[in-house]
Length: 250
Image 1: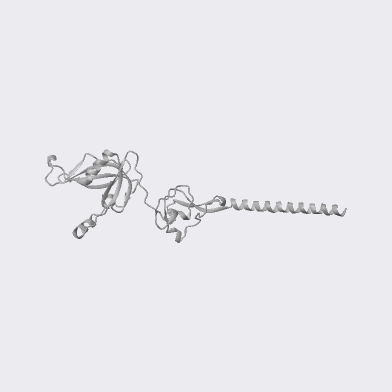
Image 2: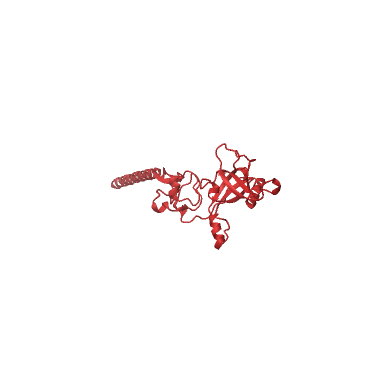
């Protein structure tokens, strides 16, 4: 009889231990589930963050912003704040819209320059323009410009010898890139260097159909180009020719 009682008591004890273990496991699982679902603040790209953009600029421009997501969905290294140290770092590559912003995507030097996007069926042509010749710093990728050409007309055109003429070369041109340096700078010394400094320009790269691009290339080789920023619904008079003789005509 005593052995039976002991066996029953042992079975009850084992059962109680099992119940307690299940309760503890369930409690721990609930805690883990709650922790996984607990919101955590991380940065997510709201728009494309171009390579070379500092973290601070990306936040200031609204390209990336803090967002609360479930902790279990946060990748390793996700940035939760931008401080003085991380704000100076630049994006090593483009960060696409919707991507988590992780620390490994930022560093001190971009991995490389992204190729410009040339629209289908068009070619990219770079033109060196002075600051006044490109409307200061107001021409940016995505701008539409009109390009004027000042050239020396042929004698057969009835112009005075040595008199220049100016007319619209291209009425509506899409700018796809603006660079600050020449693609292949040539070392100059003395007077050449001084002259180059006075006329130093910025590369403005535009996209054009092949046939129109040939006109621009010829204008680059033979004349002096000047650009104007197009306003909404504006249209330049492509047929008007201004010369020294007609400059003050009404």
